[in-house]
Image (tube, rainbow, N blue to C red; front, side):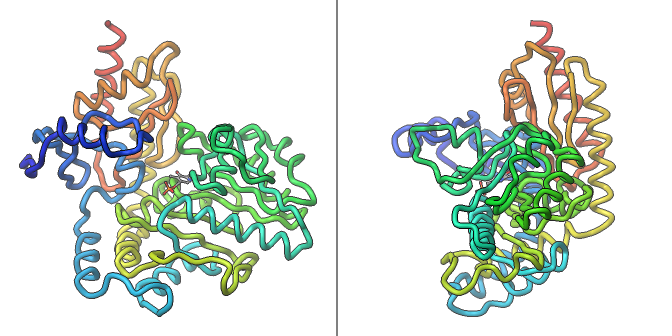
Length: 403
Ligand SMILES: *Cc1c(COP(=O)(O)O)cnc(C)c1O
């Protein structure tokens, strides 16, 4: 099926964008109109295999029937009442997130950035409770935590943009995976270490067990919180519900978003016992957050993802994908865990050219860095999709090497 939905077409959409949208995004030249499972169709009816899923958002594939049904049912019954009243889907989702991870309390948000914003508030207030007047937060170079001012300050590469300054004070970065530098940076004023267990935007760069253990130990020594940003790594992406489950550490706080709603905006800051009761009345809030439609969608997502068979399949498919990619000419390195995969291309290959060529060939990938491709395919795929993707990447690299 390739029925294109009626629309005005790419040229006119582009013209509207040129006139009316702030120039913050660089977009691929495609106007998508429909999706189903791992496939997308553009306005001309051309089919694409989606190995990006809206940056690990539609992890169950596009328009997953269980999520569509949950959104349909809930939106026809009740869409919004605000956080001034109780609603059942929010309470049930909080229970589910807590019981599946750290066991403490949950704060809902509408995005990943906002989930981290809550975590930063928790960390700072927790630190004030320990008598720290000017709390500090330590991250790794390459970390991405979002673009509001708190999350931005914890995102070293973007926080260097002085045209957006001044930044929030008290944020420090140490080189990625440098356990000794991390230990040295954590001190009496440290409120938290805030890191991604696998850096996503940096091109899928796993944090070593040694560095994670150093972070855990350093936090324990001074009484600081370890916050893991699982916005990209969570919800089954790496082959466990949470990425930390495959590491030697357990955080005090974790943040989730992206795939939590499979396309419906929702984020969550989930605490363990040490951080569960830090925020109190008046400390935080959000009008839309935790609304019935978004939380119903997330409950439907967890019904599908929180399944040992599915998670095992993610680990197996991930290994198969990485093996297939590593055997290709032009691939220097394959990184990642589960279906979160980064490809380091041979020196001299322009990944942007490869990404554009793949889009032309009907495969959607992402180019997070000059020599890196990032693959975040749906979790519900089979070997035939992997073979098709690996085949297309191989053809593209061969074709470009020949020119
Ligand atoms: C995407 C992302 C964010 C920001 O989430 P938004 O929903 O875009 O606000 C934060 N941290 C990580 C690790 C991410 O991948």
